[in-house]
Amino acid sequence: MAVIGIDTHKRTLAACAVDPLGAALAERTFEEDPEGLAELVRWARRLAADGRIGVEGSASYGAPVARMLIAAGLEVREVPPHLSRWERARTRRAGKSDPGDALAIARVTLRERTLPPVRLADRTEELGLLVDAREELVQAQTRTRNRLHAHLVVLLPGYGRTAAQLVTTRQLDAIEALLAPLGGTRAALARGLLEDVRSLGRRAKELQLQIAGRVAGHPLLGLPGVGDITAAWLISEVGDVNRFGSPAAFAMLAGVAPIPASSGESQRMRLNRGGNRRLNRALYTIALVQAWHHPPARSYIARKRSEGMSWKEALRCLKHRIARPVFRLLQAGQTRWTAVAP
Image (cartoon, rainbow, N blue to C red):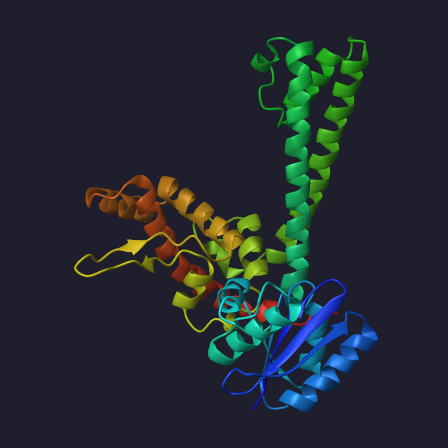
């Protein structure tokens, strides 16, 4: 039974089939276009009709081929880049090449039996697009606000006593009134930036309202520390929560599960710096809010601190603890989010 690995790029797809021992059977490169994708599917059917196919980058460049292979009835798995990177060093091929990468991906697919299935298009993907668009607007607004601050320092010394943050409508109105009588290029640029701050804020607010409408009623919103945006982050990043066999697998994906680092008589755990950093960020937000405002979480933090942990260490423990109820709530809300997007 052959296993195939596919290394995806913007214009080409490198594929390699391996036998049950990991030896390369066949290698080919296909164009990333409708004809090339159709040829790759036919090639894969001939070599691995009953085997597995591993795709690296199935959420971006590899999305079209992954979905075509699934539609053809083939079993397709997502191969995390860090696994193929480690495997690449063992291929004994000089340098780096796309066929070599495909070989590494195929061997990872052969060896790792618990690779997650490819994520298909559904409403969680649409929610993720809205979350990403809002995040970009918020970041653009922050950059624009910083540029405006740079001009105001020169134009309006001491303006911080009136509007230090340039966040609320009242603060923006106050700055607009102070800039109105001023002339010159710098003042004109500042007025333009002020309008950009307002415009970006309005667009971000519109997207936030759309996001709130889509997550309304989700069980996650009942968890202390979870608002509309945090819930949307979690839902969109996880997708089909049934891809994960247990809360422990979810915690590992989110990078909140500690990593064993023991040796001899020294038994310890180290910080997990891997995983999905966006999920990690969402869990961090929940943990931080709970640590300050949720009595059970505050008691938990106090107990960990009394055991000699620092604030950061206690917060990491709380993040790990929160992962389990988050996973269960995602499961509870799964039915609403599994329908395929039109």
